[in-house]
Structures are given as structure tokens and as C-alpha cells.
Image 1 (cartoon, helix red, strand yellow):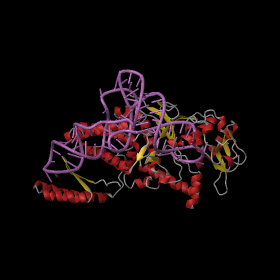
Image 2 (cartoon, helix red, strand yellow):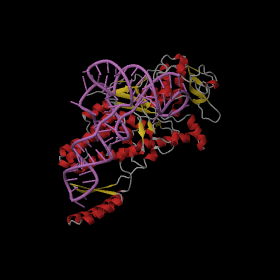
Image 3 (cartoon, helix red, strand yellow):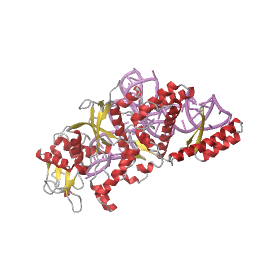
Image 4 (cartoon, helix red, strand yellow):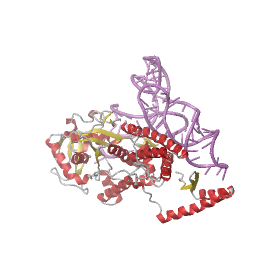
Length: 468
RNA sequence: GGUGGAAUGGCCGAGAGGCGAGGCAAGGGACUGCAAAUCCCUCUACACGGGUUCAAAUCCCGUUUCCACCUCCA
């Protein structure tokens, strides 16, 4: 049996994963800054790390998964002005939107989801430690800065040199000793929210909360720190700087997911609303969007297109159809089984694409088994496929994906109506009146009902709508 | 200027010295009253130029193109 190997951004190599405490894994994932509705790039990160979490759990680890919510920052304050609403209402609104998106994609809720504004005390304590240790300074205007030149290991994650960095645009207007020093805390400005500190009223500056909250929930050292590729610098460098300067071991391993791109370019908020999660969920189901996002390797760019998404949904539909037919034939749900091939792929730095090839193979075998009426082989394939989908968070039998559309009464009425039509068609086929039989089928197709004849008799399904 | 990433068949998308992942599309076939679904078969690629090697998509050198980050982007 293979063991889990994961890539580490710090060393740029893949190595065996060994947790600090046997049997336990602590993960800190940089979650959302709740200043706009989530687009698929945001949820890709959520899905990728959810797959990691599920795989670790499946592998027998007790996983503590912390994903923060940054609910105070410049953009939220700007948005509040723009939307003419209190900053906390803006933050809450978008936090809910993220939660809904995660739920729609079956991203498991974190063990804990700390908000920045709920951890001001911990941030102040951290700043006190940093000042005592001489790594940070409060120039007296209410700001607190980290002095990066005192840190020997600064920028090791992004492999840059301090002197190569371009200076911040505002470097001249601040009290910084060095233009590359960054703000842990910002002095209050009129009208902005603020909290009292020993150095004056203010608010969190750089993402100090990630260091403070990772320490609060995962301790001085923890196993995995995750986030998007774009967080490597400066966000994660600064987290490392803050935490290590405080004497903490901090993250043992760094995992970064790549972006979703559009037309070769990184998706950004300026691309408009079309790639927001709730917009895409109008064209595909959550499980299909998740399948699409999860099927690329987490470290590869995923070039988004509506066509690719639609194709992916069709491909997933084939798997889903097989599983549902298996249930019809077997009379019970498949038992999730993790095949050796799937495990080997997942252990190889979460090689989902490799795992998918195994699913395709199992699907083919399963369909052959259905044709042959080999129940044992059907069950074997269905079990393997369900086992894989379970880890990928795309198990169609997962209650999280319970069909929401239509009432039970409406569904049974529809089923009865179509069954009636199919009985008429079967009668016509028996008397070789194919014109009448085809007329019924064509009529149903026109209504968006697909008819398939099988050994078990005709079956119907709602025709998958063509994506735009 | 600094740092990092990418270029694979009609398309998507893995792999990282040697029996050409996988999927979609296309063509052919089986099955079917005809379809649909399913299965079988076919097409077969590694940006460019050198080099190393018995063997290179994979390693080395160089080039081109694209993308990203450089102090509040997942």
C-alpha cells in the first residue's frame, strides 16, 4: 500500500507526508475575504482542499480543518461605502454567499471557521510578543509594523530577495523604517471601525489574523497550510514572518492550488458576474460543477469554458447513470470501496486525473457487466466508482445532493404520465405500428424527455439542457 | 527589473528517460424495427533549435510565445 506524498511549495518537491502527531492532521486554509460573491476560482480552492481533507480522513487521520473568514479589510470598507451599508452587514452578506456556494458544492464545513474580528485579542497578544522580541515596532502613530530585515528567513517561500521587491506605493507616506516593512496593525481613520490596543485604536493591517488564529486553533506548529497560488507572496510570506518571529514553528508544509483561468488569464473580479458560483449553478448542478473543478489536478491551471463545463457535466452524467442503473438492478446502494489504484493515485499528490482514468475503466467494466447481467461484476464496479466519488465529494447518493427540484407529488404525477405514454408506445411496438410508437417518442423528446429502451424496459429521463 | 509557472493529437487533459493515461469530438462496426444508451475498433501528440544517451515529450544548453506575483487576489 502506498503512502501519502504531497507537494510542498516551500521545497518545491513532493515528499512523504508525516503528521506532527501520529494519526492527527491540522490544516489551515486561507478562506475568503468576504467582499464580493464567490466566483469559481474561490470555490476551486474550497473543493481542492476538501478533497485533501476527505482523503486524509479516509486514510484514517483525525483532521482538524480551520478555514478563516477575513471579515475586515480595505475592500470591505470600500464596498460598505459603495453599497451604503455598514461594513459588518457587507461582510456578513458575502460570508453567507460563500457558505451557500460551499454547501452547493458539498464542501464540508470546516472544523472551525474563525472570523478575523473575533480574534482581535489574539492579534494584540501576537503583536505584543513580536514587539517584545524586537521583530515589530510601533512608531507611535497607532500603526504597528513588522521589521522584515530582521528576519533571516523572510521570502523563502516565494524565493525572492528583499532588495528585489518593488516598494509599496505608499511607502513614503508611512512611518516605516524600511519600505518593505508591512503593517500588522493600522491606526484608526475617521469613520473606520477600530479596536483599542496598547498602541492606539486601529484595525488589523496585514493578514495578522491568519497567524493569530492558526496559533489559537492549531498551536505553534501544524501540518498543512493551504491557499491559492496568488497568496504565496505577500500573504503567506508575511504569515510566516509574523509567526516565526514570534517563535512558532508554524506550517510544516505548504499547498497551493492553481487558478481557474479564462482565456488564458487569471480570473479576477473584473470579469463580471458570469463566473460567479450562483450564476453557474443556473446551468449545471452543484455536483457537476464540483466534478468539473475537482477533476483537474489542484496544481494545474484550469482553463474555464462553458463548453468544457458542459462536457464535464455530460461525462459525470454517464457515471451517475451507471450507478443509478446498478441500484435498479442490484436493489441496494453500492458500498463505497477504495480501490488500490484510486488510493495510489490520491497518495501521489492527489492525482485526481490519474484516479479518473481508473473510474473510466471501472465504468466501462460496469456497463459491460450490465449488458451481461453479471450482478457480482456490476456491484464490484459500482462499489469502486462510488468509493472514488465519495472521496471526490461527488457521490450522487450523498444526501448533500438530494434533489431539490419539484415536489414529491409533482414528480410522481410526472412519472405516472410518462409511464402511461410509454405503455402506449410499447403497445404500438408490439403491434408493429412503429409510426405511432415513434410519434410518441418524438413527442416526448420534444417535451424534453429522453427515452431509452433497455433490457429492463423503456426508461425516461429529463433531457440534459444544452449549456450556452 | 526580480521571482515563479506554462506550451502535449480536432478539443479537454495526465505523465516526467524505454511496452504511447483517460475523456470528449470524428469515422467505422456490434446491438436495435429505427433510435437512444452501451460495447468494440480506428485516427495519435509532446512550442522551436542544438546537445547528452543504446533510448528524450521527459535530462542539459539556448530561443520563442503566453501567464502570474512583486505588500490586503483562491
